[in-house]
Image (cartoon, rainbow, N blue to C red; front, side, top):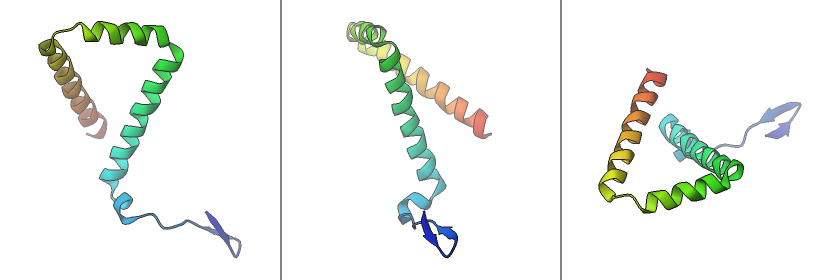
Length: 82
């Protein structure tokens, strides 16, 4: 914010970031980084063990888990935004 005659003016944002969908997407992506960073900060050994277990899983199982997580996320967003 920039001071101007006792008021504060905000600097204009680039046009790309003015759409709500882009802002929501970038916010969600930032939250993914926050949550993942916290997991590694709070429980680094557990995260390392989980990564080792994942490398031993079959690709089909990883696809199923990923698809299930994606569906759960879409349902959650639908329920929240509903």
